[in-house]
Image 1 (spheres, rainbow, N blue to C red):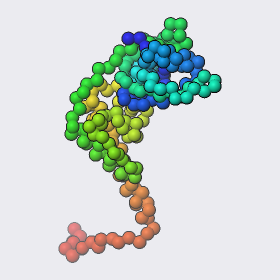
Image 2 (image 1 turned 90 degrees about the vertical axis):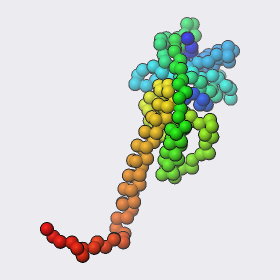
Image 3 (image 1 turned 90 degrees about the horizontal axis):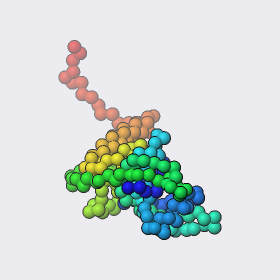
Image 4 (image 1 turned 135 degrees about the vertical axis):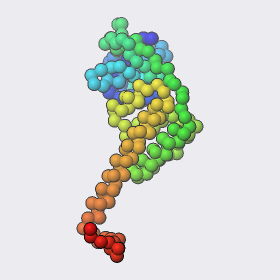
Length: 213
């Protein structure tokens, strides 16, 4: 399938709201075409000087149009794709385009993995002293908090390429548990530093039966 493309250094996950400020002429034309034709477009992720995967988005609303023609728009991310071909200009259009192949999502989530992920996320937020929730578990999936788990740009991109929900949940659980371990160690280090120079109660050792060998 051939679709218009709007490359960005950003990762958007299916179901996510995507706010964009449009100011380049080529993307003004893109938004205008999407409005007139009720068409979708793709946001491929520009990473490591490459374009390989991205997310199809649908224009939801043009919030503001400014005097110079620039716009604030809101889109909704739909499905992940892999780029097969890329052309800097799509035919006579100013914007890019290309053939894409959509990834079939594998809906193989396991309830126990979702529970572990939510508990791990809650623990992370508590360690960081950040409010967590409320979360509607009946509609929760691996993408729901993906931007709020401390993933790097590259990790978010790796997550985007995983078609299996079960694999994505495990990926996030591994990341959270590793992050939690680091934070706990940092908190312990901070406590030790703060304790330095203060009077402390030491447990007396009992040497009653101790003999030097």
